Amino acid sequence: MILHDHFNVNEKGHLTIGGMDAVELAKEFGTPTYIIDENVIRANCRAYRNAAIKYFGADALPLYASKALCFTGIYKIAAEEGMGIDCVSGGELYTAKRAGFPAERIYFHGNNKTDRDICDAMDIGVGTFVVDNFDELCAVSAEAQRRGITQRILLRITPGIDPHTHKAISTGSVDSKFGTAIETGQAMEIVKKAIAAEGIDLAGLHCHVGSQIFDIEPFSDAADIMVRFIADIKRECVYEIRELNLGGGLGVRYTEYDREIDYAASIRDIAAVVTGFCKKNGIRMPRVILEPGRSLVAAAGATLYTVGSVKTIPDFRTYVSIDGGMPDNPRYALYQSQYTALIANKASEPKSKRVTVAGRCCESGDLIGENMELQAAERGDILAVLVTGAYNYSMASNYNRIPRPPVILVKDGEARVAVRRETYEDLTRNDVL
Ligand SMILES: *Cc1c(COP(=O)(O)O)cnc(C)c1O
Image 1: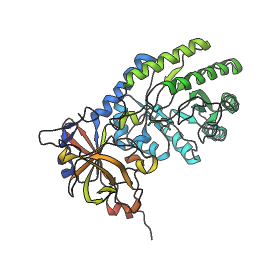
Image 2: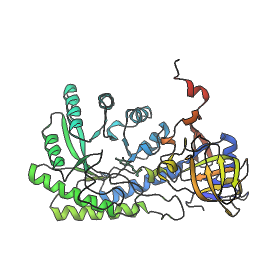
Image 3: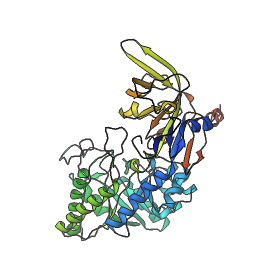
Image 4: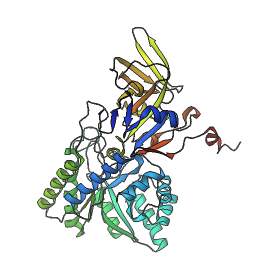
């Protein structure tokens, strides 16, 4: 087992993903290629859903934050597993609709929904809008009135938790492009406007405190603040908030330095603190929603590359260059995100080197990682980067006119193309002149 149960080494000394030989997969589908173990995603969905129903009650609905990994097939999987989804753009909505995802289970997020987004979402009958600010509330209300419908909404609230330290703070986090802050008084104002607005059914509140979180304290701190705010609304507006969405953000094990998280136990603990806060504040327990992205899909993925040049600069470092890089995984360039890499065809050999894994773009920041432990690499080896299921394909670009890799779903010994490899024709398809 390497990091997660579905990454192993077979008798040939090759990495296996969901039981399938990574070297064979690279041969069959070419490189670079995203491999996604479908059973892992399904198992994670079930773990979240079963725990949510067990600890929050029968009407609990975990949402998949689909920005983490978005293509038609993933929405089919989410639908089959009884999940709701969180979408943030017209493109995600379009893809979900194409997959036949039930619209009433879609939550439509984003801090700036365009007029077209609002119309598109209402056209397909999106169940819930998560409204970010006053301006958007007016736009959603106006369009709902024009259509003679009542649109169910949540309001995105900024509870005042620092997204970096995850601590409750009294100033600073007010300054966010997301949501409306409690401490400026604007959150209470927008609640009042939403209650009064025509064409709007204010069902509840939403907050999202951050990402790659390894304990429940930030959720607990946020829930404490949100439940007190719900009690304030009850008192001041004589209005019952029926739903509380605590966002996503539970962490994932990317390297051996990260802990493994028991998602069911985290949900149990979050449920216990929310129940306690509701009792203390004398309010009825709202329907609690969680919307994980990363923790559902990250571990399911690995990216396979072919090693090209290996270059050692004496007294400095060794660069192992691969046939992908920041266009398929921009996360090291963006956030210095840490990954685990190995040579898939030498997986049973010791990691005797420390290297920089570099991409092929004209950009010195185009790296997958520095100081990465790796087996001795040579041209033609298959290099695997593990735990790339989240925020890799969905953040991929065509920088340097590099076609995006395919997404291959593996399940029970079978591999299927879920998204085909882009071609050079795909790259020029929209070039008119
Ligand atoms: C990104 C995001 C999520 C998912 O976050 P993860 O860290 O991937 O679990 C959930 N809700 C909102 C509003 C988000 O922006």
